[in-house]
Length: 363
Image 1 (cartoon, one colour):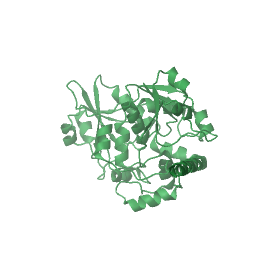
Image 2 (tube, rainbow, N blue to C red; image 1 turned 60 degrees about the horizontal axis):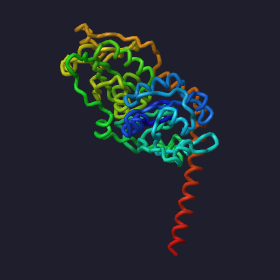
Image 3 (spheres, rainbow, N blue to C red; image 1 turned 90 degrees about the vertical axis):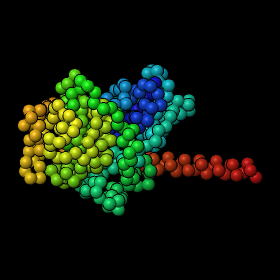
Image 4 (cartoon, one colour; image 1 turned 180 degrees about the vertical axis):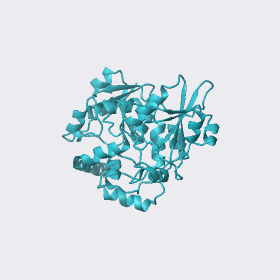
């Protein structure tokens, strides 16, 4: 049994990748999620409520069980309580309000494992993209623009709070994909959209779609960045198509993703995937470039269904939450980075002392 705990605020594919790696180290993954009050005390205000965060983590396909209100500091008592052999965390550092390593106790007892942090994404960077209102993060923009963008948002000196550009590889997609072909008797359901900043509104929608059939096989069509920007405007999408692909693939309700799906749900697409049902949420259906209805074909065939997930949360609403709390988030990131830099300095000093000792021993 493997244990992993974090705040899991603004869950992104970096969190999902950490949980994928953690699950690969054992056979049962228990994930602890902190309360709003614990996060506020140690880091600053969370973007999402604890109930939203619990549900988001449950939707990640590698998670077997969620512990609600897990303590901020992972102790041996916590591991023993849930019969976990060890806990797993990324190769960054998590500090308490007074600057202590939250995994100190389990590290000393040898019940700590580390997994690689996903390069190119952090909650800090995503918040920066929202606040800057630039399009520099889109996949068709060159890297110099992107670099300028990330530098603008206080990239700072900490390698953990800073960010480097995300590079998509086929290996990453293979690791996230289920690799399952549709089986006889399964209902093939197609949904399309941006699925930007993959959030609890998306999860509730996909869960509702999943319940429409006894054996659902859900295919998500993701629109290219330029297409999303055409109908949403501003700096959307916040996450580029490569990032959105991994975010959606990590969801337990999703079987397959079409990367760069056509905006119009055509006869060719429906025939190619042998689609039984096409679903859309209660959100507005934007017209195609020529003003036509992108769902005309499934509507004509009588296979279009509007699904009410009961959740009205949108990517726009999340951005508004961030803007409303802008100063608090900026202060939170500066505080977090200051603590991390202090730890890095201490680690450097310790390493220098060890090097001196080794040199003296040789002499």
